[in-house]
Length: 619
Ligand code: SF4
Ligand code: SF4
Image (cartoon, rainbow, N blue to C red):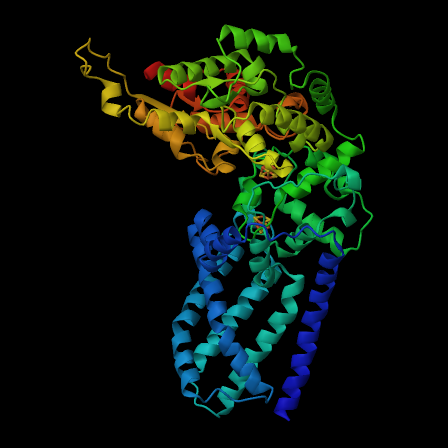
């Protein structure tokens, strides 16, 4: 009788679970396939680190992440126990009286205590502490799930006190089994579905941050226009979100009071999918205003513990808008500049030629030169950044490095790509690749982190592979012999006049998103600064999780007066000033432009120095 009742309950709850899962699987299967298993070894490594060891979960929020990890590991440990108890309850086989199961049950006791401690802490955090990332309302669903997990652990621990075959033991067994069944039926429609999906989502997440496959114009691909265009990985992501808000609190746009919130983007995707709104335009799902507020800094997807990728949604939707002529006006002028003059400023190429001549630059010759220096739009036309490049050239010449530049160079296409103008990006990229292939460099050196990412990573999608290195990495390697003590003071080894002492300077360093987060280059700039007498005061957001300067994703060109909220650059500038250092070292031309603008607005006396000038002046 009891077995029959258990079968009935089992089929009812498992049926409810399966029906909800089937609905979501159907939506994933109906989406254009964007799943990829490329670079499997990397994916396996990341799975072990982020799923098995829960590193990403713990890293940003050590306490809450640690408690979550206890619950996760407990769930894994309990999988065998639940299976055996259910096999018994369904009358299939009774393994509960075997010696190995008894030993396993004893081994589970510490896990049960750990899960109980973890879930109680998480419940207190949700119901009492209520950090802003979790939303302003207390989630009833989370409280119910938390109570279910607590009940499971308590009923398990009670099995050590209750004598077998007593009424108490039987009631306890049924309570434990019923809570598991109820939990099963509840999770697909809740954020706890991540328990099932997140291992898959993490494994399927692209190894490349901000991965944007090229559009194939021959197949008439134009980007994401409506809900039915969202690819299978985006749909999977939408059902995996655990609503932890890490993307939200790390987003510079949200931090500056704008309407963009990456967590909301994912939840709006989920809502539209479940509502069956396949024909709804994405500009209406998210609002166009929000889509243009993203700087493409990558903080959201880099922080997400469950493998969700936000940039394919944001930039994919921008592509759809651009292909329908719905880009904002300020981008129209920038696109004109790119189309007519192949650079973002719309300046004549004679100005680049003048700089090349005045800086004494040779045209790159693979037989004579060690590296090709890529100037970029900023290097070719921005007088301020040209000072930084001259400092780099001085260092290269002083160290005997042979270098040259291309006779002709277009914008690498980054502003077109990140704003969704894929056609223009491909035109620029193909033109540059042709020139680069003809020149044949083995190594490209640039001071612009956006050029590192675009040429080094995005151009690979056209089959062009070359090593692209940022000047901070190259110069750090080049000056490794310049021991700090020798640079600071003391007599010259050749008996010449004594070196002037380099005074120790307190300063702060702003990591560019495309260098620190995208490129993982965080140690080299710091090593250089320390080597040449700098004492770094770190700002609140640094290294591989910097706070964006606000220039990326085409926002360098946005009308600052019309931006909602504060300016991202003002927020970052304040963070840098709050370090107490009066000098900011920069390593990207666009960060420099944005932060100097913020300094002017704040009428602050903060000094700026770019990294190459800092090194050259002390070398
Ligand atoms: S990429 Fe940066 S700006 Fe864009 S949504 Fe993510 S965190 Fe916000
Ligand atoms: S997208 Fe990721 S980081 Fe953002 S709320 Fe969802 S799970 Fe958390």
